[in-house]
Image 1: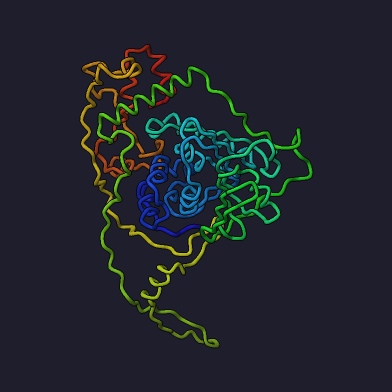
Image 2 (image 1 turned 180 degrees about the vertical axis):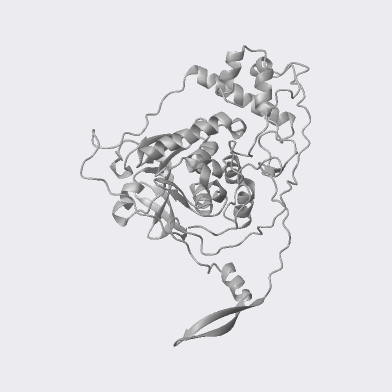
Length: 437
């Protein structure tokens, strides 16, 4: 189940490894992965293994391996304003990352078979919105989850720009899945032990591409009793209220102003460069001692491992595959002994005051003179909510969100600006979505 990259010490380290192994190839996907801490979707007692490239399952709760999710995100070719359907939405980890790329005017729906998992996903989404600084750095298309078997959906009711199925699809249901995608849309699903990208190029025309070898559990077939009304009712598309649109417009304008004033370092700067890694010396051969049974005797046996041939096979994609969610055939290992120091510390001075001759909205939300960073709120985990687990957020003696203890946390520029506005406190809380930090 995964295992294609080395384990990371924190979420940023995991993303560095995925990027180094070319699972993450675009800046947009990298930003989304860094913004959502994978450990927050684990149960507390299992978070020590959150940054390994492995699938995780506990009861009905399940997460695919990071290398699988990264390939899915790249294959979906997401952009702002698209509609997305996640079949087998699970914990909501993937749906939340997708929501950061769709923006506030996209559509983000998930269908999950187990009601307890849907409740778990809603709880995790609520924690992300209330506690993660990434919520202020992005404009989120909030996922909406429903309970049911995706094979009982009313296919004729709606089609989506992007669809992902997180369970193995049999040939019998291939056309059912294809009909969920509108013309020009993309469907990504595991089928016949291959993660497959299907692009709908016409009403009855499809472009099919195999991405990598995987092994998923098959879709659960519907039972004999169907839901009332003959199938699952997907969430209705609702028109946003004027209050909500005003909040989105004000927050968007603040982000644009902060980005302009900080020279691109506020919200839309390029992802951080990977941490420097110590050069690892790999021996070309190693004597390995084993013992074999010959009759009733135990005899020593020696053989030499061939590192050169192993490396050649890895470069040619000849590594071993995984089970469960599957793994890429070529497993390129990253150095687990990487330095923890974050080399991209940015000297962020106090944000200068806004120009008085800005747009109408800018004049309303401009920061008064003399407002400093006293209201700054830092992040405990880069791209994720606070965690008490040592693997996601260390104590004072370790690292916090990928930074060494004692380093100053990143500033939440948007929160500073909102709190500095000459507005009543309830309105400020509304602009901050009544967030806890």
